[in-house]
Amino acid sequence: MKIAMITDLPRLYEKTMYLHELQTEARRQNITVEVFVLEAGSTKLDARFPVHRFLKGALFAAKARQYDVIHVQFTLPYGLTSNLTKGFHRKPVLIHTHGYDVFVLPAYGIGMRRIGLADFLARATWKAADGIIAVCAKARRQIIREGIQAEKVYTLYNAVNETLFTKKSHIEDPKIRAIKEDSEVVFLNIGNLVPVKNHTNLLVAFKKYLKSGKSPPSSKLVICGDGPLRRRLDTFAKNIGVSSRVSFIGQVPHEKMPELYSAADVFVLPSLSEAHPWSLLEAMSCELAVTASRVGGIPETIPTEGLLVDPSKPQEMAEKMRHLAENPDLRKHLGSENRKTILKKFTFKSHLAELAKIYERLLE
Image 1 (tube, helix red, strand yellow):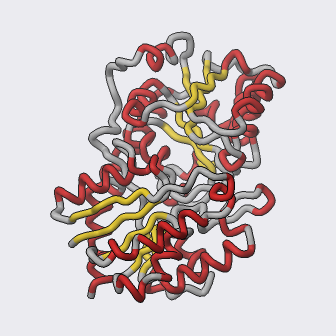
Image 2: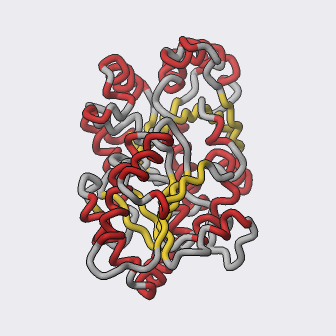
């Protein structure tokens, strides 16, 4: 079986990232996966309208004829172009959605389909596709509600390399090791600094945690990631008086992330919208206790529903953080259970086995 995997996000194919790991596991299972990163052009027009990518997608049709299945990451633009050129390449097209192209929060300007034209094109692309992958059951239900045939929409949860993402007893990187030096409890958040990740409410929750009743353990909030809100969030942390206990550490190379998870005590994910976040799976695989938003596929992933929160309620978030901070034995137990969940349900071996079944159905 020979699969053409298409994406316009180079990061997905970096070492240790999803497409790189998927390709490696596929090789072990005698499936050939060739990844094609068709990036956007460098002009301002390309940043707003994917003209360059549409042309690249159309030209790719000539290569597509060499493969058994065209597997496209994200609905637009390459899901659309792969369907439009199907008469030429004559191969089944599988669209792999990741949440942003399914879930919409118009009030926050979140979700590709919040714009009328994108909504129309996404629906047309799904109807024309031979198969659609949703990364959680909630996303699958949403796609079906758009009028798409249920039998061609598959739930396939994301996966993590459980061998790489494991708790480290020794942390080699001195910068990561220093995170723990002056704190009993380290809260860790990972994500791009954009509105959907809800960092403002996270900072408010952390302040409430620090100011709550009995003095909590000496704590630090570490935020890993970068984005357009970096300066604004730094200023906000200073304005509410928590900057001395908050560290914005920017991007960390993905291969070093297991050490970062291992330096933390609690993983906090307060996003307004998610489908099935890789950061959550990585944290669980590294035996971190987790508290996260009750959105998307997160409730389908975390075994302990009592640790889920309403992302619009910082007080609720602060209470969960405090509960975990004050109970080290509970953190250890939850971390162990999280690791078991990963090994049972979210490894790349099981992920690819399910994906192979989808390929086979498309080729019947």
